[in-house]
Image 1 (cartoon, rainbow, N blue to C red):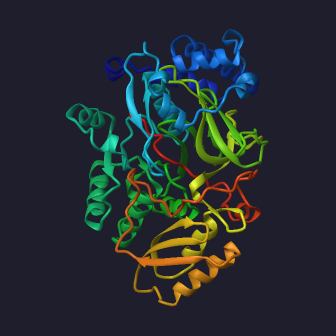
Image 2 (image 1 turned 30 degrees about the vertical axis):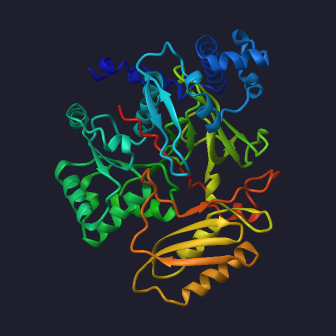
Image 3 (image 1 turned 90 degrees about the vertical axis):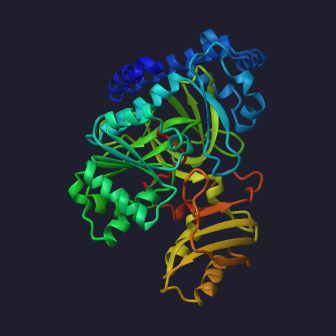
Length: 465
């Protein structure tokens, strides 16, 4: 009934996806080429921005091939903001306005139609099915998106009740609220959990302190997204629930890009989109080389996303996954550009190089590091009784050692550190742009400290049915 009312084709798309995850690589290439050409032809016929662009470049849309994709310029957030009306198909029906969470700046406004929504939901159902879950299995979603949290009308509440989904706010994770969440999970039953890893890890720690055994819930898998999945979070969540933890990567803008399988392979949704990795100058990077993730989503005829620069950094790999699926893999997803620190000598270092400093100091409950200028850092700390005043000197000393230069470190103590407006927890933010001409987004030092096979995620891949 909902599919009919909302004009979605989720389960038809899901049927295609279930077959295409096992297809040969040659067949997958053909699928990509066919769907990419259809998207380009639709954009040329219906979208003024792309019609003019293709004419200017001299693109033959009838013969467009996947190998022609690099001829097209990148799509950026600035281009979308400047051309929003001209980038939308005026003949599209059932389109809705969406926005990103704005955790790294002002939100991006754009439009999505039922084609993209159906595709994203189908991709999520397919990926969660890898862990033995199915639609109708009771789910608790710990989320902070204003879209989901402000639209709990009676129809949606009825729909969620039928599908066994319960949305819990990640904005208010105090002891009283978390006890109520745990009581409800035990009372209603819970077979899957979805949400921010930081919020779920916090809930698990509260359960441990209250001596609540979450194994009794019978959760099949915990699905996390939107934040870096630190290995200690993964371990804590897996041990608390007694089940696998699966990571997902995507965004409201880019779509459902990749998801982790039980064999820990981060499979790209390559039957519905193309992922490129490029350097600062936009040059394609080979397997194993870090660069910015660029996405072309086939299921965006209402507002095409073609060669969209996500602002995320990742690595492709040529290896095959032991699970047998032929969908290609992201070897790593290393974070937002703002999750990297720029050292005074120009090196671009992964934020983990400073995060590890904080994690090694006793008494720090949580923290946030902001690089305000090249040699100036603000460090906010929530401490407990184990914290020692001399730790300030240690923080300043090790920061200088890691950055190989004297730096100013201003330390302040807070009662709490609120999440970003989208509900995410960010331990590090850099307001400094990398130096021009940087070919690699990593320094050697930064690359060495990245936790292997621990992808980072961002923003919302949970487009709810």
